[in-house]
Length: 126
Figure 1 (spheres, rainbow, N blue to C red):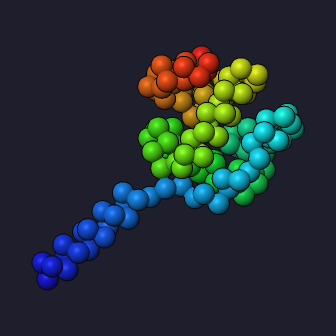
Figure 2: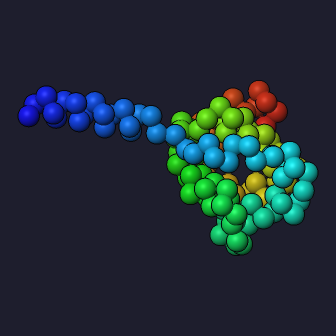
């Protein structure tokens, strides 16, 4: 019985530690989204619950709070790179959309404070 509990615990720890967000949407063309105010606004409206969501938008909305809270610890490298790319675009070019998203998903600025120095290296100034 003790051996079963040990094996079960090891398997459970492995599953929890290995959790990552789905990579199903990692090939979405972020440059196309960034170039199109219409597409970008659709995603912003989706995560702000003001509009319909595509399947990838739904996944983003579902994972965004956890990703911000855990500094994207469950993100793939491609997701981390894409997140920085979108964040940089929003901060530099669509500040009003960024401010709306920040008010909803980072109202106490904890994410921004934790990552301020790292993002400043990439030219992202909150």
